[in-house]
Length: 335
Ligand code: PMV
Image (cartoon, rainbow, N blue to C red):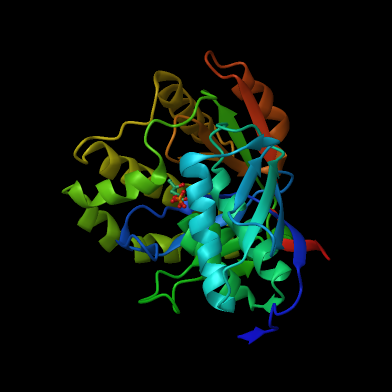
């Protein structure tokens, strides 16, 4: 790692941008909760047009971190999580210097699009750039992972694999295809806008209590290899089969945990059933669901004209947000 000493600079600022991502092969459960080392590898695609922009200003006169999200000052758990992340950066330069973190998302909070992935990818980029740390993409991905596991996948571009690895050094994400590799789109079907009942950090710890967890994890390498091969070969049928199977495995583990985690609503079930039906009729569409009720309908871009109005017409659907494959997290400015 190349580091420039923060030394005598009284103040250092950088702004970065990152996209959220949607996982086709899911991350659920850690081997190590503190380091967020996952039980398995995972695959995802970044979401273009949706973004978090974060400005980090380290300032020697500050005596505590401050965090402003979408214009609102954050206290409690939100601030504590950002501050714990900044501790990693402070550890890297060996200096106790605090920062103002100002972050905005251009997508609605609680829209079922995990903002922690783009949030910690942007924070890792902006924070390290502000301190003059020159980190490689793998180092940035590992750093982002410490804030939120899925954030490791928002650092590289396009279609991404996060290697489970064996330790902190070997667990990071890498791109295996660029955003223009495939005309795949994510139609995020908004069913509920509220915050999820059990967040993913708490959810990961419950995975171990499911009798299905070991079986799910055993099957990931095969599903991941098939899903990745399907993406590389533009084979939508094989991609759909692996993506839906993997989401169902994760929700089976969630439902059989103690206490059980049930994220789906009746509208979730309706959308899942309807998309399966449309695929049987010949439409290149499939589904995946994260830790919430909203459904990500994945399909070829040629299906947009049919699928978006058809999804919006289903009872209980509030909105549909469309995203193409997105690029890497990047620094926008430094001063
Ligand atoms: O990165 P976390 O702790 O928010 O976990 C993400 C978990 C899922 O979104 C449900 C699956 C995934 O791989 O993104």
